[in-house]
Every structure is written in structure tokens, then in C-alpha cells.
Image (tube, rainbow, N blue to C red; front, side):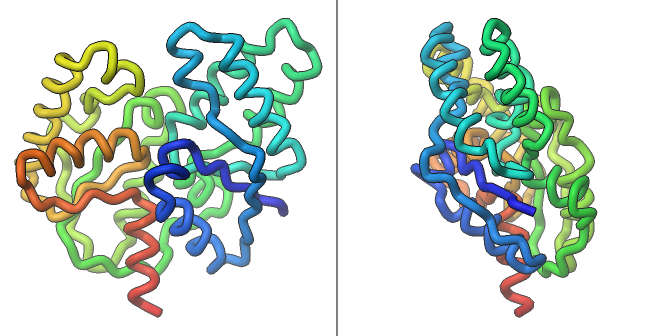
Length: 244
């Protein structure tokens, strides 16, 4: 089984530790992740901004990079949802790449989806004695359908005290280019989200998309609130490594 890592732009450039956590967790189950170095951006920023020709070139590179993989996993529901929901649109007039796009869609998963739905793993034997709340990102939840998997994984972490996040499914205001084009609205949204995080009195905020976590974490840091912000893969790996 050839499993490949689609690292995504934010994880590659700013949060490489997320990819490292994924790779080390899967190593425990005998899975060595392949990493095609030719991979690039999924094309979502260009697509959302109306530059479909540019997005198409990025998508073509991604499709070619993972053509020989059995599974492709990423630490981002947003980037995987771009593949699932828009790659067919980009190649509707190119039969060869449309077929390749459909093949990629069928084997692409967000990290927790792969753990729970493909490997059937919910208990990694992690221990994380902290108070934790969870932000479900919009794209992962609404577009990709990642809903129960993160909760199933968190539920099995020994010592973890889970606190529901008020209005959890409200957008954090990031939305990629949305935060740039409508910065005032974005700022108001993330301020509200940060206030809800503080209401939980959690020590740790966890999520599945580094865009959202970067946005919320930045607002919390700006407010001087010492809340740790982590991708779920990081939390699980830390919880497993401390048990070793």
C-alpha cells in the first residue's frame, strides 16, 4: 500500500511539524509515507480568486504527483475539499485529466478520515492530561463531511478533558482570500471565535486546518491569552510519544 503525504502550503512553509507528526504516527502502524517533491499548491487561492487557468496548472501538477499513490492524505480538510469539489470542474473539457482527477478524488483523505475510516483506528494509546476544545473548520466539516472522526479520536485520549466550543461551527473568519479582501469582517469574526474559545477555559485549542488555527491563534496571542493551539495530529503524536 503506497500512502503519500500531501503536505499543503501552510504546513509545508509555516507548520512542518504537523506533517512530521502525521508521518511519525503512521509509522507506528507500519505505514511509511511517500512524499513526491514535485507537489505544489492545490490551486484553491487562484480558483477562489477567479484565476482558473492558474488553478488548473496547479491541479495538473498535484494530479501527476500522486498518480501512482494508493492513498493521498493531507492535514487539511480545506485542501482536500478543493480536490474533491473543484478538480472535476477544472478539467471538464479535458477527458484524460478528468479521469485522473476522479481517480485522485477517490483516494484522497483528510488525516482523521484516513485514520478512522480507512485504517479503522480511533485509539492510538495517547495520553494528554489537559483541558481541550475543538474548532471544526468550515471546509472540512461542511464540504468534506469530516464530523465524527476528530471527536472519536479525542474521546480515546487518556487524561484529556474535552470541553465543547460554543457556536463551534461558526466560521473563524479566515477563509483564505476572504481574510485579505474583507479584513474588517474577518477580524470581527475571529475576535468572536477567540472569545468563545476563552469561554471554555481550555488549555489547548485543537483543529484540523492550520489556516483556521493560525487565524484564531494569532488573535489569542494578540490578546495575550496563553492558550496552546495545535493540529490534532500534533496532539495525538505528543500523547503517544510521551507514552513511549
